[in-house]
Amino acid sequence: MFLKDQPFIVYRICQEIVLHLPLKFSYKLASAISNVYRWLHKRDYFTIQKNLRIIFPDKSEREIIKYARETFRNFAMHLVDFLYFPKLNREYIKKNIKIEGVENFDSALLKKQGIVGITAHLGSWEIGGAIAALLGYPVNAIALEHSNRKVQDFFLRQREEKGIKVIFPRDVARKTLAALGRKEIVSFLNDKDYFGSGLELSFFGRKTLIPRGAAVFALKTKSLVVPGFTVREAGWLKFVVEEPLSYKPSGNEKKDIKEITQKIIAIIEKYIRRYPGQWYYFDEL
Image (cartoon, rainbow, N blue to C red; front, side):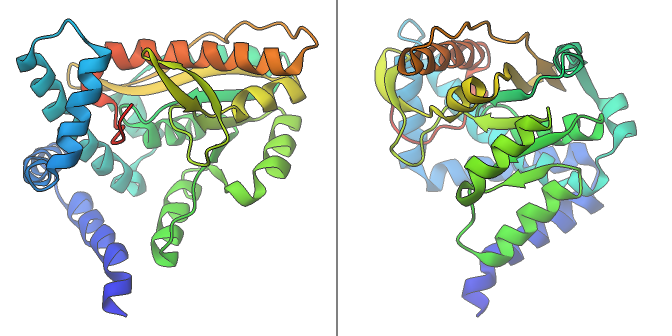
């Protein structure tokens, strides 16, 4: 029983540490631990370097190694942000997080259109959904189910207590259509296909399966496609909402899905290039 519950126990112990230490110290501690993790998981470390060489063929080996190390440090700090959720509120957001572009949410909702939110495993994406929900936006997030029930419940509680409505894959069609029908935001992580059913598109010059769901639901519900990212910049967390991606249905559904998905990938590529040490993709491109 202990071994089965071990992941949950680790999360809870780590959360208690984070909640009882100054946040800056928790970041420093997480950064130190990430160095040990990187040493123990060299395969992930080398995979990240390999991907970075594909994305940045002109960068020196020294720069590639620097970005790879930053990736582990930033991922550790992302986990700290997630564990800090119980203390996250509007006052904290006002004091500690830079907000850019939320007027793009406002204008979309004023048009009485649903929003297909696009993001990636970049920066501190978990806190992005919480920020939007705490600012008063109706946020739904599609999330995978965890194999450990206690960990699953822990993750679910973390998100729901901040106002995020979670949609699991088994309910994705029904609940996503319903949420967009209510003119709410549904957030998609669009840089990794977990089910092998995506479109084969060019991603940093490599043929890669890319999830098509965001484009499919946008077309079916006439929703706006709005990218948003939460990244670290000069010691701050910055929550950025981009303008909606432009698309005009042609009547050829297959063609339209491909075109929208290509636009989604283009904006994700742009942000990964801008923040190369903040993309947490541990598979080979």
